[in-house]
Length: 267
Image (cartoon, rainbow, N blue to C red; front, side, top):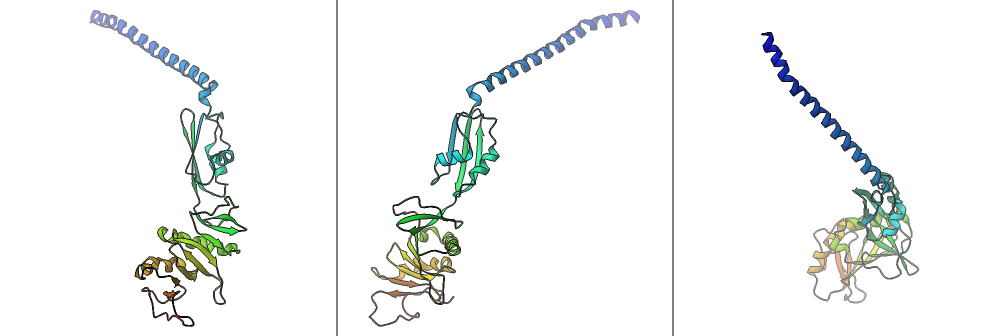
């Protein structure tokens, strides 16, 4: 029994030695891996690879890439890992035209600034210049002298609250109809300080109120489709909705019950 035990222990000694050797080898491999990782990191942070080399700006239509990057503080050569994306986003959102901003970092050295701009819903005309009006009602300084074609022109608007109300109404108007609006005049009347006159690209004039124009103007395509080709006139959308032709006999008045009407003739 004792001999068997002795033999058994002797048989195990080589295996124990082998196990210890394997354990030592694993430690050595782990140490070498850590060593080379540290060497790589030192080289990486000392090399141009750790600096931002590619900067992209996406989503901007009116704000220039240069303006956005200057506001963000991001530039090529800045440390990739030193960049505070959250701070850069907050700075970019301080620009009046920027609704949201997101800074995306792509290893090893690329940064993308993704922005969303406020929509330009109209332009306010002043002394021959056109000031963009954003969807939140903010009026920007004039940025173009030529006649803009991407939104209607607001003429005779001086009150900031009324401009903001008009901007909100334009957002609610279906895009195909909004694209047909050329000019919007603020034309206050005795009983309605919100009265407006809209000039359409098709040659029609709409008389209405800021307060309900977004709902009333939805009938515009239906009204136009019922008119005879070549008809021109005023589409009244104040209370009842009806068409007043320019060709009516002088001195006569249209009756709201005559002409083209929509289903909504009241309110």
